[in-house]
Length: 290
Image (cartoon, helix red, strand yellow):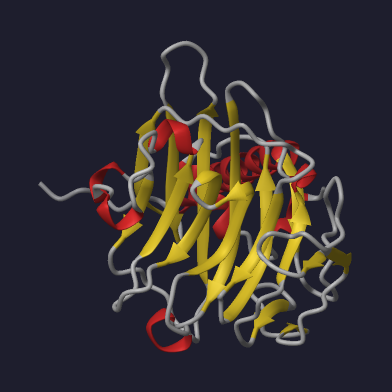
């Protein structure tokens, strides 16, 4: 028995129906993301963020940030006015002992059931473009990478793995203070990606979410990594942070060589669908209208 072809009027009605539904769904997602958006640095015409509690960028003398001054004072870091994922972008041309950072007030911290999302774009060939050693495109902490610190990095070994690290208090995840190389890999609070798909000519979206850090009772926390909208893994364990908000820094480009664009922070953990929607915004986060 042959099926009759669909009539043109039916096809038109279906198209009109879906055209009404899809924009509404997109509008809903834009609205909920805008409500959660707390920080956005597009790097179109400068280093300061367009949205944030303290939008100005700072340069510190070193990773320890004992001395700092407003603005960018790294000669190896520039704004490229065109060629970013959207508009301009940051370009890290070399390694430096100096550190660029935003103040931690832009990363809303809660002492109980704290959740959030960090999103940005990278463009590099990690195996060819980076110098030897670890590289952290972003690291957020008040003390150290392994003590109440969250970051993504490229491993020092070739081919370079890409890793999300959500390290609670050192006394929680490594109470015996075991040397890093001797600490079991499977117990490290990280989400590793063995063969990340980064490219020197293409932009790759990176997002990580965290949920219920400093959980109530015996509950567990979670942290997830997404690369170009694809879920790479989730860390599930108890994550306790004891930040001093006045000392927290959102540090960019630690030993990083490559391009960096659209740093965005949300005050809740986005869903996988929301991360994908964020990635596919034609004009970037500015489309959210906040």
